Length: 110
Image: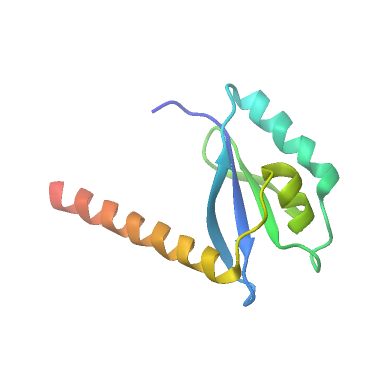
């Protein structure tokens, strides 16, 4: 597996819990991904206003940095309106259901 850096967008729900959004990016090189991440720094908002995090994972897969953004920042980055709290909760449930299914498959093969 090729080691590369990546960004992931995380939604903060009305209970203050982090939810997967299925939005992320991997550029052609780790440097390009890092520079794209840094370009979003100008959109950063206070913790009180934050509705999303952009998480940056380095080539080793470690979370290296995060940027807090609001709905306006989300629109500027994605060109789309944010989904509802309920929609992101469903995306998150689906994501973790799929992860658990993949883990069960690996356990069955072992």
